[in-house]
Length: 283
Image (tube, rainbow, N blue to C red; front, top):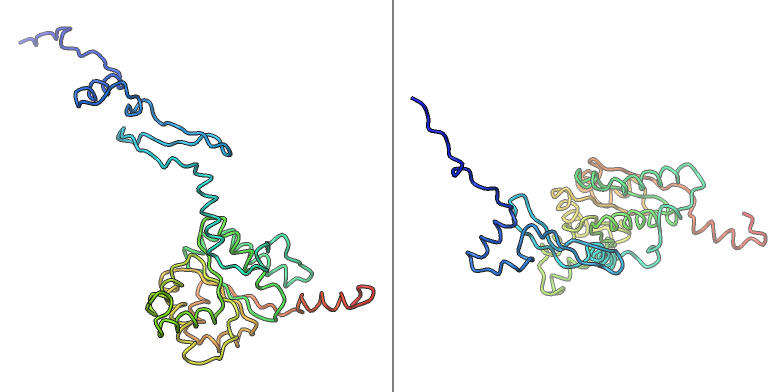
């Protein structure tokens, strides 16, 4: 038994996607001449006076039109970066500190520079591991400079940074006992310190060294440890002094997958002062 031949009338003519879209829109009651609602007229663009053309629409894998924010993405990124810088609370003295203007005169300084530059350049990897850094040792030898350099690189990557002193943390937590800081609770303040992308805690060891202070700092460090958030500690104490001040539990959390740099050379500030005092600029 033979099968009947297909007649030419059974073959459907090819229809262009744009024509099909227009027919469908007309049946739905839309104006088919409105090209803005036709998939084959996308993506559409706008022009930024500073950065050129940028898209304001796209067509996804299901041929659905997706509209984007009509804002230049480069301008938006710059604005976000400015807001991050304003919220970072980097001390004014260290705003312009970078890796390129860090003075290297001895091998220890070169090691510190290399470690801190690597930490900043590969921050995404360190952040995934929750890797921390402890910069400790003599005062005036570049800890704040390198911490600010790290902060500036991390901010440029679009991550949030906050630099505070240990006293700032303790004081803000204790203000909640008197209904301060917008009536925030102690836990809410701790969580705010815990949520920032990179927290830099300066002047560790400069407070009264009480058990209460240790508890406050431990809570912040522990919250960040559990959330895999990196923390940088700056202290003028030696390694043993930092561990004694923070307590073994907090110190161990900072050291896990982290790094420790001992700044044991002469104070750069004092060296510059001594040089300036010399009639011929000699030591």
